[in-house]
Amino acid sequence: MNKKGVKLLVDSLTRSAKHFNKSEVECLVNLFDTLVARASSQFAGAGFDRTVFRDTLHSAFGMTDDVVLDRVFSTFDKGNNGCITVVEWVEGLAVLLRGTLEEKMKYCFAVYDLNGDGYISRDEMFQMLKNSLLIQPADEEPDEGVKDLVDLVLKKMDYDHDGKLSFADFEKAVREEKLLLEVFGPCLPDIKSSIAFEQKVFRATPK
Ligand SMILES: [Ca+2]
Ligand SMILES: [Ca+2]
Image 1: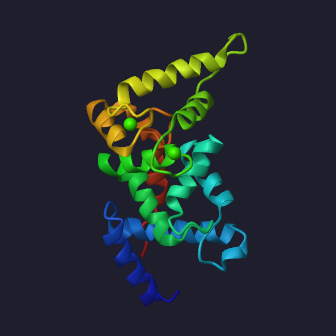
Image 2: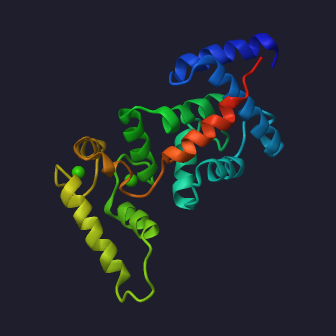
């Protein structure tokens, strides 16, 4: 991309991703270019693939859960073509690093709605809670414990009693108790790794 193209891109991203200033956007675009160079060339420089995305989030934010990482990838990949473009990259990071509660609720709900049908079902809760709990081999009925937990979560969060969580249920519960934002497993960077990431990426002041 030529100099003018880059400037236009940075201006437009500073507006659309709104939580970053211009020089921060420039740094994120530089990081994007580095990641594209590392990716396989299947997208002809337009973006990077799932593998590079997962490696990057893993090393930056310590995210290791494959189920969660796959869903995080899907929330970034708005075009749904397996390729993260520069716009998707910067806008996605804006939510992860600096999102408002509203934006983070939408993001977490989308991550937890594994099949993307607009509800977090009993099965989806079961799958995620089972995955995030450290189940002891000595437990005789480990699935029973997870089922009990699903019942507990529904009792607390399923306001309209239809046996699944809509976004309205989720939003109401999280507004009352912020800790429920990541109730089905961590999907946002912790404060420490966010700060470390920002320091590393934004330290290089672009000319
Ligand atoms: Ca669902
Ligand atoms: Ca419900």
